[in-house]
Length: 179
View 1 (tube, rainbow, N blue to C red):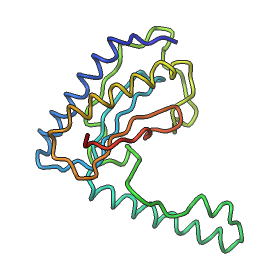
View 2 (view 1 turned 30 degrees about the vertical axis):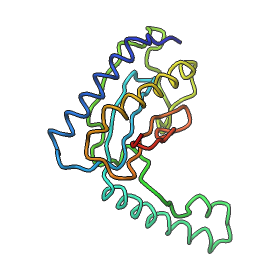
View 3 (view 1 turned 45 degrees about the vertical axis):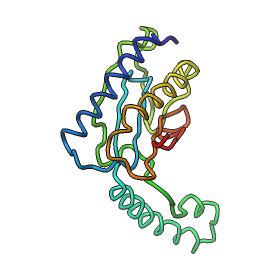
View 4 (view 1 turned 120 degrees about the vertical axis):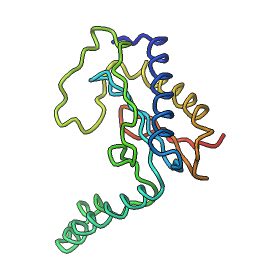
């Protein structure tokens, strides 16, 4: 599979600028706690999402509340292996779908070569391991650094973080926003 590097980076630069402008327009006083940038090679789409600390804390609380029920059930049955899947989560919300400003900007890529036409994914819960990732992942890391530079003048929480996706997760390769 091929990706047109220069065009992809141009599309992503436009996406980052749109995301920043949209956040400032929609909610100029927002303090950014987490930024997620992901590209889905199967649909040839990328997006940027912003989260606030308040939203992150609330989603972690809700997730832990939901998990506790199942944790307690499995522990009562003596199934510690299954119960371990429902241990409390610590830290920030790492699910871009639950961010306060989910998909604040999106781009449909022209940079994916025709042989990269969208594929059907069963479930659609995580990025698929495809031949494009060896080329795409380093480009996402370039985009991540560009985003850190572009977003540095937004209102940032002292512990603001920026992540991109990988073949393993929608939220991965997390770095601090402060340089």
